[in-house]
Image (tube, rainbow, N blue to C red; front, side, top):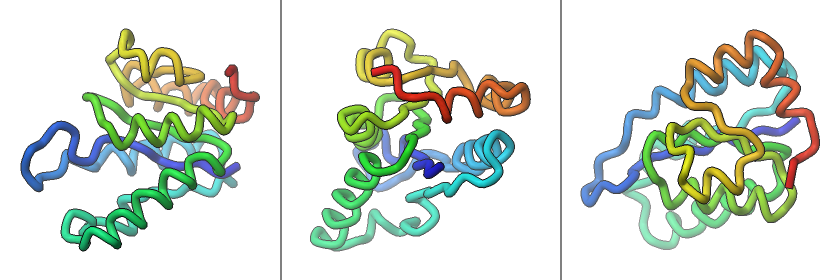
Length: 145
């Protein structure tokens, strides 16, 4: 099982600041508890300085990550707020019939509502699902779309 951790990085910021990325460790830990043998890719782990990349490098990384989302088995996306990049990653997974699990309070956002196979309200709900076996079931079941 190959899992891509997607999530807000810059969000709607007009500057070069980055949203707190601590959620990534929590998602990885939850997936590992649910599926210990999963191969997990976290784009932030290898690209912490991505805002300083030249345009060519940035574009290459952006497009490679989007392509990867269409190739992995599942994308787990953290969206406490809207994120254009994460929406594209979710779309690539969806259109390639990959599993999309979102963590977001935005229950009425169409990208989340109609592309996700399942939506957790919070990271706490994700943790509970990892501990009670629900997350493993969700990740290994076929996509619902």
